[in-house]
Length: 306
Ligand code: GRG
Image (cartoon, rainbow, N blue to C red):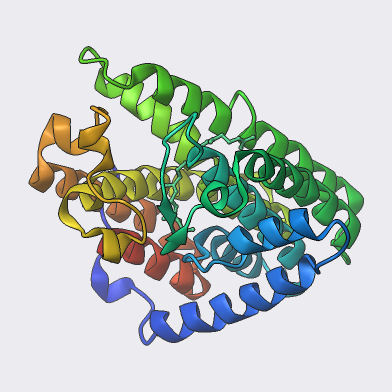
């Protein structure tokens, strides 16, 4: 157990609201520019429909924050930041398909397949996934090629059978299974949610040229916020409304999914999430005053309402 940081050692006067709104604006502009409409319009429209549908943009913002913390620039990390959002968006499109979670709403609007049909939604997801890799390789500038190559390889691992896909398949297999253990639940979320959040942080550090010790420290931070993020997600599925979430609430219970509150209850789930956040903050605090965005983002993960 790591001792939580004492609050009087936290960097003062960091305004998360302004920081988030500034970063979200920059990420939105970069995403919009990354994918202009072209022929064949149907596929580009479907890709842009989901990519530009809002969302917290947490993964790109974590990537930019980690890159800057390690002495890099926003410009160096922005193509990877956009690629992370492309991969995240494609995973949401496929997750919402009738063959998976069968959802009608996402990010406050109809899901991709509801608007464009299942065939186009599958292809829009495929195109976003492949374009994410192309985007990093083609548009990252002022970063040595070995770092870019490492980020591309790590992204491949984080989304494939060792990452998101692995988590999703165990999740699907566990639906309605009353024997699911906390270990299985952890496996699902470490892979399905945690892997991309972890890469969001480590990729920013890698692009900035961080050393292995710093990358490992940031991995520890990201693993903890990733798990806390999912615990909070499970709690919100019970406590928030569909309007607040921008998607159907109460889906986990309906699908008979094991969740953290189903093992621990809501109060204990919140306590566990807070403990992970305290540990995550303690891990990055020694990196100095520049760690303020990562500290504040960790707090935001437990405090969020959607
Ligand atoms: C990645 C190749 C590949 C295939 C997809 C469908 C699938 C395999 C995986 C499912 C991954 C998934 C949907 C995980 C859930 C992650 C999660 C907690 C999403 C919600 O993230 P937020 O709250 O959403 O950051 P916004 O809308 O704010 O971006």
